[in-house]
Length: 466
Image (cartoon, rainbow, N blue to C red):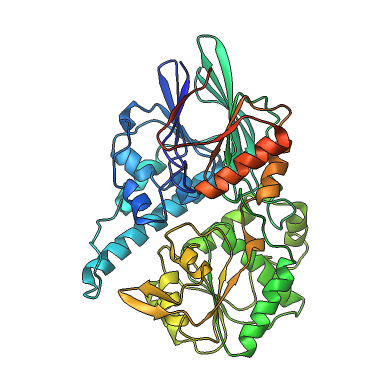
């Protein structure tokens, strides 16, 4: 019996892991870390419910850590099979895993040395030396189109428009001569956005569909992103403040840089110093310029139009070392600080928030999904103080939500993507969403399409042939 088990991203937005079994072979689709609440992050330190040594193959939809960040643990625990991904995803995964390991080492050391810290010190989930064995297992596959993993598993990839290299996957599972089609949406991007291509719906007659539901209960706010960003930059700079943007190094950072450069060239904002406090973000930007097949036409024209790098603002400062990052604290004049992580769950941005949040002249821009239990979610919900480095830091800065910059499809965009399927799936499972969002999308699918849909449950196993 071919079957599928939800090992992550069921009832929550993170930890994507889906185990497909057929004809005695096991394929894992994605291998992400859990992020958010303490209960979720504790899952990262627990062994997988199956022995990693019994998994034969692994394929990735894209490089974000909630889809790749548990790979070093899986390999440490005995996985030795190939990890299939397209070249852009391979390059980005290497960057992300090395950065993740480094940050974990830094944070573990900081926790041990901080006498004000009341939390139990955790050893890193993995360290830098654990990353290289993962990279050796990565095997390139086509950016789009078909490839065989084995006699049991045949994959066709489609551009998901979420980040560089992101894909939706059609998996044809063969057991005892019977074929079952399973479609994994991956993370679906947005339509009509700068830089990346629009998401493509697989033209599949799916038996089973797994669809993400991150924004299944809401739409992104309307309004011109450039105009809204210009208004924030102008009003904050006029009052002598600075702007902190918690942004993932891959995707969100490049989008902000694109708009800031555009606004500068149009003289709609002053040319402020922009500090990108993430060496990985610069490397990721280089990859955006390398993998041009992911660009939409607008981006490609601008890139080749003699204007220089469209992702490079005029007064750009990259901080590589911790010392350079700390030196930003000494900047008293208006500036823009772009730093990871996007949900302020960790990383260098936490130091910038501790420094800038108490000043009412400053602003923090929340530009993407903020998972439950993260500092970003607390700011989004109007927290008056934030616990940072063992102290309660007052939140006096202006907190601005700019959902227009999200890399995830909103509710109507998810339904638009689903409407591209040529026939109703026999069964649809909603994954990668908090319960309210997944349930809302389930109801919307049933109402709009009259499809069978259900919210995936953590560790449930389903019969793919039923």
